[in-house]
Image (cartoon, rainbow, N blue to C red):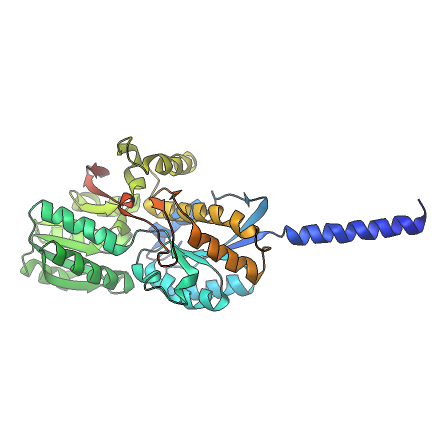
Length: 385
C-alpha cells in the first residue's frame, strides 16, 4: 500500500470513528436535591440512591451531575439553569420538595428539557399545560393520600379534624386536597393552622388546635420539621388520634419524634413496609428489589420512601432512554423531545412505589396500588391491612 493510500485510509477511519463517537455521545442527567437544609432527611437518601443508578442504558454511558439546593427555592432554580446551560443535560431529576420543583418548571419548559420531580404536590404536573408537558413526577399525589387518610378516619369513627401544615405550597396543597377528601367522607375540619419549615415553636397554633377539640389532627409537613407540632400537642396533653402525610416516611422522623409520635397513622408508598406486605401485593417484589439494594450499601433499616422516589425516577428514565435513542442522538433538542415523548408513553412500569402508566394528561401514572396505611408502633412502621 502506498503512503498516499495509507493516508487516505487513515483519514477515512478517523472520519468514521468521529461519526461513531458523535452517534454514541454520553447522556447527561442533571440532579438537584435538598441534601442540606430543613429537607435534608429527604434529600440525603435521594442523593444516595442516585449513586446506585445505572451508569449505562441502551449502550450509552450515563453521566450524573448532582447539585445540592440546600432546600432553597432560589438555589434549586439556579442549579437547574446551571445544569442546562453548562452541563448540557438531556434530563433533570429533582427537586426534593414541592416549592423547589414548582419553581423549576419555568426553567425546564423554556429549555424544553424533560424533568422528573421527586416532590409530592399534584400541582407539579396538574393542570396539564404547555409548561407541565415537560414535567413528570414519581411521588403519589396529595389527593390520593388525602383520600387514604379520610377513609381511615371515617372507618374508625372520627368526625372532626384539626389541620396544621407547612406555610408553603406543600401545606397549601394538602389543605385543599384534604378538604375535598374530608367532605367526601363526612368529616369536618374545625381548625386550620400553618407553620414554617424552619420554625422552632408552634405554641400559638397548638393552643388553637386544642381549643377546637378535634377528634384527630393531621400534620401536613415533611421530614423532621413535621414532628414539631405533634411533639407540642403531646406536651400539652392532646389525646386524640394523630395523622401525618407520606412526607415523614423515613427513619429520621422516627428518631426525632420518638415516643411523641407513637400511634401515628399515615399513608405511604408500599416500599416503606415491603417485607410486611402479602405475597399477592403487586408492588411487593419491585419494592423489595430497591430495599435490598439500598440496605446492602447503607445498612438494615436505612431505606426510606424518599430514596425510592429517586429510584423510580431512574426506572422511568431507564425505560424511556432506549425508545428515545431510536429517534435522535443524545445532546440534541431532538433527543430531549424524544425522551419526553418516551416518558409520556410508558406503561406498566413496576417501581418501588407502584405501577407507572403515563399518558398525555397524566404525568404521574400511579393508581391506588401505590398506597398503604401505616401505623407507628414501638418506633417502627407497621402495615395496616
